[in-house]
Amino acid sequence: MTKRDGLIGVLKDASCQNYYDAGVWLLYTGLGSLIPIIISVVILMVAGVNFGLVDFARHAEFGIYSAAILASCAYVVGKDLDKPFPCRQVFVLLIILAIIVATAFFASVSVFGKVEFLRDLFTVDAKFVTTCTVGLFFFSLVLGCLINLLDGVISNFDLQKAQKRQAKELETDFDGLGDNDG
Image 1 (cartoon, rainbow, N blue to C red):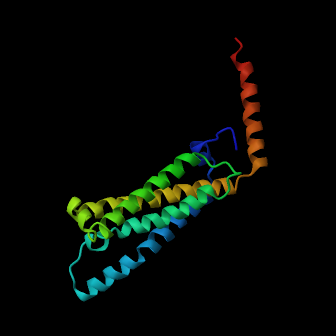
Image 2 (image 1 turned 45 degrees about the vertical axis):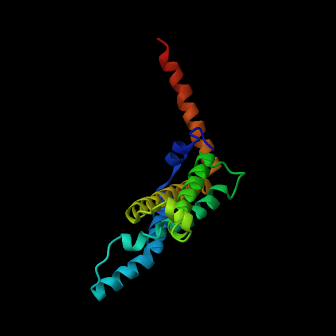
Image 3 (image 1 turned 90 degrees about the vertical axis):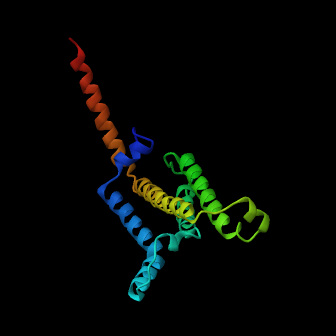
């Protein structure tokens, strides 16, 4: 793409609009994912019922939310293999591992309790499931925001502008070579 290829180079090429768009994606996805929980919290508060975060996450619900976010991230990273996407393999690996973790948590809660020999082998700690899947959810949001930021920069990449900037940098570097004579 430019002289500064790679993750850091692409992030340096990001415009304020790219960061704004990624932030809007984060806001919509984060709030949109949590609307069922937000509405449930409001209803429980109005009804005067005591509740905790574990009530909304003990069945690995946040793992499901994470898998949905990560699936859309996989699409963005792999949608156009002709265009360079920095650290594509790393992002794909992170997405696959996170989906496997989300699936493992969901399976541990939804399957292990129903299959007798698994129930005897494994006990599922609701607080552990809650902590891990909520953490996975926030990891998925951050990863998705970063992927959408990179995609925005790549999609809006102006080759002529980059070539002019690179030519200017080369000219500056070339002009600086004469300053070292002494």
